[in-house]
Length: 555
Image (spheres, rainbow, N blue to C red):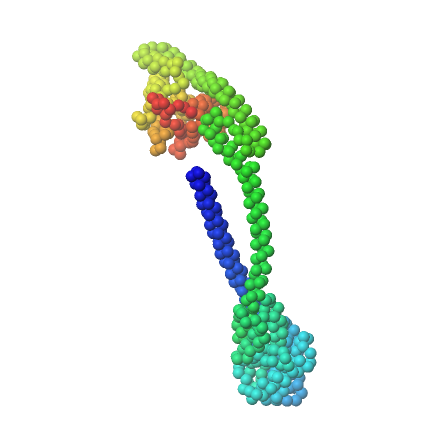
């Protein structure tokens, strides 16, 4: 009974927890919706403002052009200048006709300006030009309104003046400039701008004002907001009013379709993701987990999961069969590889030995002819140590200390042969002497310098430097001589680990060494070859530091 109560309580807690999570998610969604609502509303306001500013800027740019053109007439137009000097008569009329033609040509380049005019306050004569968008009656009404305004001001027109005028139910923007006894100007029918302001939805009213004169439309809405801009040239203020409720309805319509599509898309996406997770990701994750175990060496792992699709079950069965075969073949393949490696090591080492055997017999023969018995005795001792080293049965693993002692025997033999005319310098860190090494690792470089240095052996100088790297896990060896160095072709082949073939056959010494070292250190081996700037060759090796008396194994 208590157990059932506990289970029931746990179900209630889980249910309440899920309910709280649902409420929290609903609240987050509502906050996101409200935030999106506000952002969309502000975005709509920004679009309205930018649209109004763009339309107004087009008209204002033309107003600026009108001012510049009229100012240019007062300065450069000959007919205008002569009109101010001629009082009346035929010359006066002729110049008026010339100026009318100039104004007509100027008017053809405008998009918003509907007419241009000139008024001579001394002669009380006017000149008017209008474009094809206005008829004669409309132009005459504008003319009469302009004359009335000039007469009302008694000819005292400011240097520049911008005016809003209502003429027969239509609104016009008027620009005037005064130049002594002449008044020039132009007008623009505001119908196109007003129509644009009316066309923006959900507009409910508009207003245009300049110097206390305002053009307003009636508004039926009370809850409104407005966007506005001010003309930089005319100074007029353009304002559009929008219904806030209509804007909210527009935003809601914009959001509703997106919300429905988003909900459907998310639902489908979650369904697909759940299906992919069940049908693909879970089996792949299961395989990845077990493959990692196998990569760590655990070949006892077997794949089996009846909840996964049938295709994966077939794959698991094949994979398990493969593991069975691998486990059976592992020991046999390992043994075959070890045997092959030992055979190859022995073969490569035997390739190196004959180079020295013939040279040693020649040295003893020459000493015997000279009856130099002390040197023969010394030579015999060096050869004894050298051959004991070469014919040892445990030649798979040697240490650098033994290698260097064998190298000393070899170099002593060469010094006997060439009457102490060979100089050898060695700088070896003592802690490197117990490192494991393939046999004849350094001997090959000494033999190569003796054979291919290309200089008189009486001036041959060789040096060997061995030290531990800063990481403590590797040893660096540097061999140098003062010979002629490597040829460009040989240097390129050595650094590429290519075979070196000479006219008398393959040059196997260094190539042999690189192969043996590669096998001995299982790839953890680097060799670099080059020439010294002051003459001679250098060889640099990097090998892992593995002491002889350790449990570590050559990989």
